[in-house]
Length: 583
Image 1 (cartoon, one colour):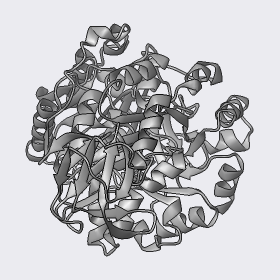
Image 2: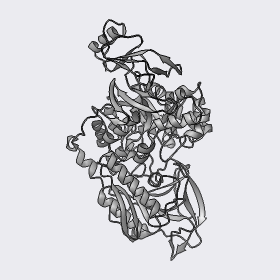
Image 3: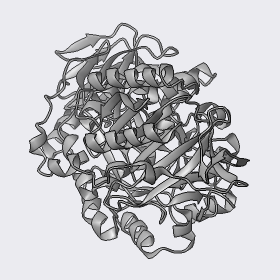
Image 4: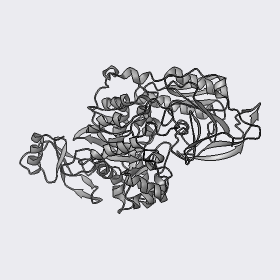
């Protein structure tokens, strides 16, 4: 919020009655409004751009022909999917030129409710970064999940007054909308009464469903994976968020339909990105690079990562280099290669040649008064061989989940499987593995067991407590013993990732913050994550061309077609009903 005194100074500096704090000279300025390059001095005062033209001052930096563009905005992201705390996550994003995110913390909210919202807001205070939050609309997402919390309109209402809250997060359950669910409608009305945005989640939607969401005032979507789906949304005025995450890479299939006319209704997002992907490839800056490589003009690609997200979410003074806008910007040597040399936030240099030069010291965990509640989130039984039995008939043609590489969607297969003594037996040869979802919130007998194909491990088992969106314990394996060891190790760690073979834990990564995030530095988590992925590939024989743990984590999300599994069993996503293993 600009104070009256600051406003006076901005006016005086812009009108050349007063010298600015900083002048950048001899740069090439990316104009995201007109999709062109302009030249001129850029004057900055009190963290804001105040002028483009000719200015004089005491602090002048000659940027010697570098490009100057707005810093990037990720329009939809779940920070928890990085597996590091917001404090560490923001470090990585700043190094990649991202200074703002629109975050939906429904992951941690599904585990600990509003305490999770408080934690995310607390951890992101007083950082050189704009952390914006969408209030989770779908905790729980469907009746087929068992989560640690359920958030109704009365739980969310107090937060809607916060400046950093931009609206209501992705509404996932179409049936709630068409069945006129009272709590959902109350959440939408609450959001609209504050002039804020309602996000969508329109996986597999046809034209009628898109029409319905828009009529319900749900105006964004990040779930389309095709050019046809993108056109359906854009033709109806829906904001299109083009996702390039770790588990779902949709940018290349959607990009051909984006042009100068519909650019203003389109933007980049990551949705879910694992830390190793962020460190190795980046955030939405990676989307910009891909778009340029695919032939999109660099300035258009930059627009998709800046001004369009700002306009969508009402961030009125972010996303452009123009008078009155916040001085969040990047310096680049080469626009086509997107070589970022400097990152500025509110006119202050934060990153220089890839190194953070200004960042607050980490907060003491005890400063968050409910910290103990988010590191003790397991009430789960010790798993034994009785819990993972899957009884099926000898003549069974089983309903099977098939992985689609680099997609959150699955295929629904019906195939014969190996049976011995009335029990399903995993077969590496047939590519039929066992998958289990185990309740960690006190419903100790609630365990869903099924069959999965295409997961591509040849030995052992892997497991995770990141299992969208309820975040129970999710295990896939070639045998029951290793699956049992994996599940119990996750329980003992209060959450995490694990790889097991021959009854032994080969590697684990504890995620004690709500069972979703590590409390270590991102550098330490990155090393451990790379190592466990290496072990899964080399020791367990994983041969997939996708992220094993992230792909596994979405096998329990019953709002993305076609078939998923929860603690309650197999879910036919399109019809929203439970189905047996054998028909």
